[in-house]
Length: 353
Image (cartoon, rainbow, N blue to C red; front, side, top):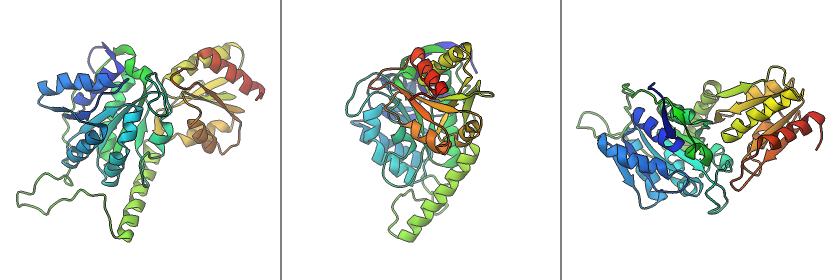
């Protein structure tokens, strides 16, 4: 780690990606993530890397597909409507079992929506936004420091499991400035014997492909891929607990909503309400066991979201609908206040609808 520097979250992503060994970036400008591309356009030429502003988001994700197939660390970034355009390519990358980083700095929707922060791409990110059966590992930062740290982790996980990883931030995290300790440059060389790098007449051809005309082979690859997903759920689920030991009301929130919720939990404690917070850091895999264990003591849950209510469904499933789950939300680019979250905690503690 270096001494702390003041950076925007978007800039921290870009610099951390470079430290992680990424030398290839393909993207297209869209608010509120444009600073990622702007930063890469300055830095990549200085380090012998590739920066290319593609003619569209569709082109950008297919360039990522090609470079990932050649075995290099590669990334793209966009915001909600742009990520929607990338979905076909993301499905191809997942189907070809290729490692890559996709950054989504979310804005309000649907449609063109607005440019203010949102978390309404949760379903798209965690349920597989493209066609077919697949998952992305989805990481949700709640600070500029985590924007950097989770970027490095995303590349490591992508290579470890040979699959695409999404960093799902919101516009607040992208635009916020905070002191950040940037990671040291990686020196580890990761062997990728599957990569398409040219045979030089020394080995058989490697083939990168997601097309299987034999249905039995396609079924086999799907089952094998989901066995890998089970291992990821067992080994890579990450979350933060805050004041949960004796909590009777558990708040579940990620990203900027979690930062707001921490203040509300503290305020609830001052009122004598035993509140706590579980913050998923991996949205997929979702911390189901942590929530289920918390439900053995808690009387109610509150899902705090910058959406019309998406994560709440995973909360309900995780606790097997054994406790009431209240939704505290804003949408369209609005952010819940600590007072709004506190009000929901008070209602949940009193069992009020």
